[in-house]
Image 1: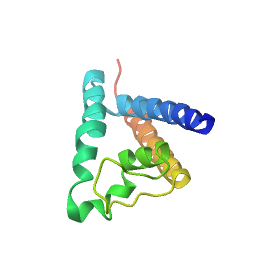
Image 2 (image 1 turned 180 degrees about the vertical axis):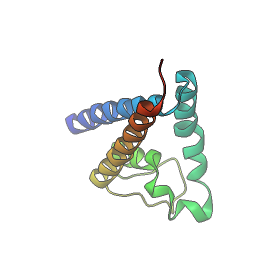
Image 3 (image 1 turned 45 degrees about the vertical axis):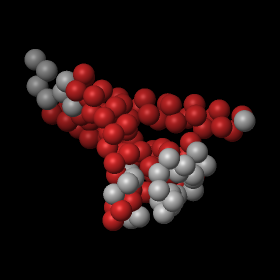
Length: 115
């Protein structure tokens, strides 16, 4: 029970940093929120049911890695042929996604004229 709570807390912090990077990447903050919610609730679910895509590409997406990290590598909601990474590599891969979005958002933010 305690490891699950720790993993949930860590994933919440990393998702917050992911959202921070997305907010810096997209100029409109409301649009950034809509994009993040739309991806994690709609697009991620659609990617998990496309037959040719779910076997190869889906396991590398941020949503699949977050799901695998939180649920110990199980994908209960989707098809049975979806094989996700183990929780630790999934968590690290989601962290890589987060750092990439954060760096891209920082780079775009530094290039904008704020005057």
